[in-house]
Amino acid sequence: MAYQISDECISCGVCKDNCPADAISEGDGQYVIDADKCIDCGACESNCPVGAPKAQ
Ligand code: SF4
Ligand code: SF4
Image (cartoon, rainbow, N blue to C red; front, top):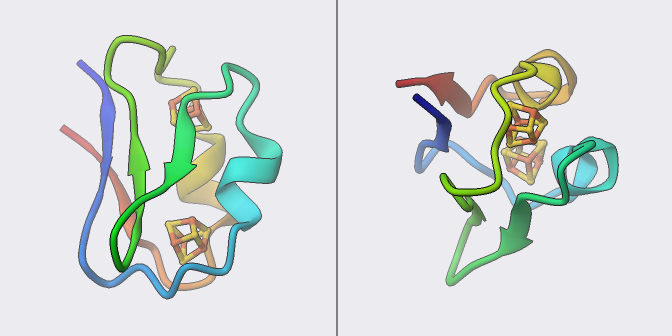
C-alpha cells in the first residue's frame, strides 16, 4: 500500500514539503510518490489543495 498522486495535481509542492518520509518529488507535469518510501501517513492527502494524493 502506498499513496499515489493523480493528474489533478497542480504542482504546488505543499505535499513534498510536508512528507515525513521524503517520498515525494517533482515529476514530469505533476508530483510523484515513491511507493518504496511512502509510510501511508496520509499527510499529503490532508494537505493537498486539490485532493490529488489518493490511498491505493
Ligand atoms: Fe509521504 Fe505520508 Fe503521503 Fe506517503 S502518505 S507520500 S509518507 S505524506
Ligand atoms: Fe500536487 Fe497536491 Fe502535492 Fe500540490 S499538494 S504538489 S497539488 S499533489
